[in-house]
Length: 231
Image 1 (cartoon, rainbow, N blue to C red):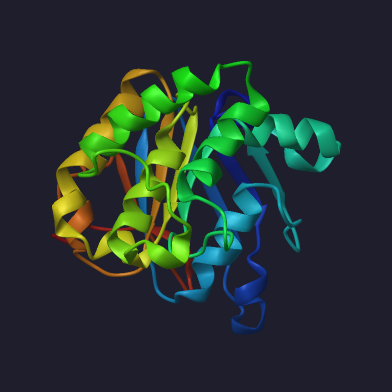
Image 2 (image 1 turned 90 degrees about the horizontal axis):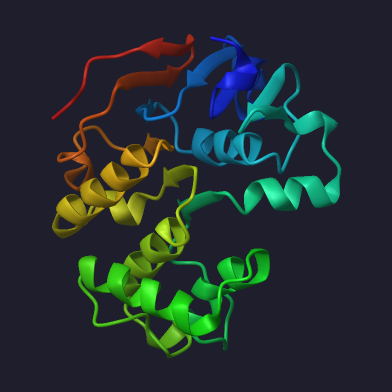
């Protein structure tokens, strides 16, 4: 597949967390309307993989294309604009302290688009109800239960019709009650022509059981290899 026609493409990429282990390089393509699961052999791979996919760090070798463009040729403002088209559920327990969770969740959409705050809040409320909350929490994160922080992270990730969604969150994986809403949210991204990449820390994660990926991979000392789905 031509990298510029993919939603996400990694070409000969080495993960820095794996360098000392001598793992092979990663070649990976995620097309429009595709959902992929990558099962991780080591938890440390998740952060390295996500940072590289988001263009936050340069890989030790290789090239990463996201939404048709290589991260390496983009300037600061271009990268920000690109990331505004990406949703992510990552480290859902980490939120800025002393700020309302709702304000933090809405901030990326309001910053990058001309959408009115009332419209953004209405869209977020619909998503929040699908994930089991009456709306986004208005209290600071230290006053919000972890389960609701995970739900709010899901709302933030799928808000604003992202073209690519990255998921790498152990707390979400363990919440079986989110299996149906997360599968529905992923289905909506797929139907719009977007793509989803879910990095799984545990085989048979309860929240992932309702998701039917187009591709399943495993990242271990051999690099990225095709895998059989664990249920």
